[in-house]
Image (cartoon, rainbow, N blue to C red; front, side):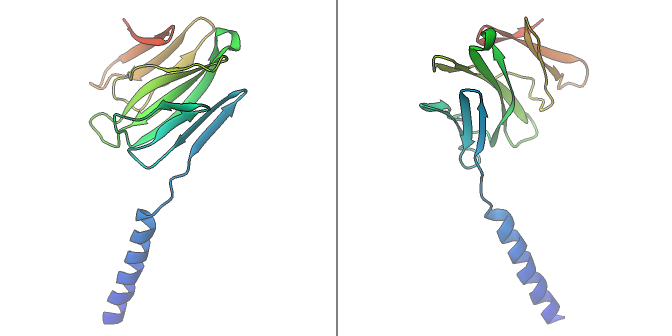
Length: 154
């Protein structure tokens, strides 16, 4: 019985040790001439583009992910749809758009969303919309990209 307990204790310590000391791989995306890298420890990830930091995660979100990318302005601007996951349940996610222009300029929107981590991104020739389930249980909330700003669609 004692041997079984020691064996299980060693096995548990081994498994727990593996789950605590895991490596955090960088997330990297190249689309045409545009490159984005997300790297860092949880709560400290940053979004890098050639020439600098596009987003420094000052809000302390647990994880950042590029959910989608698309071109606007006839291909002159690459847009990355950034998901900022909090790691919590009250408000699991917010979102931002990062704009990488062909002349090298980078800009980013303020965060937006309903706290839902189930966005539906609709990119059309004339508009970009993000639709979220309402966090109160019924209906949806929509946001529209207007230039380089996000506005709630009424």
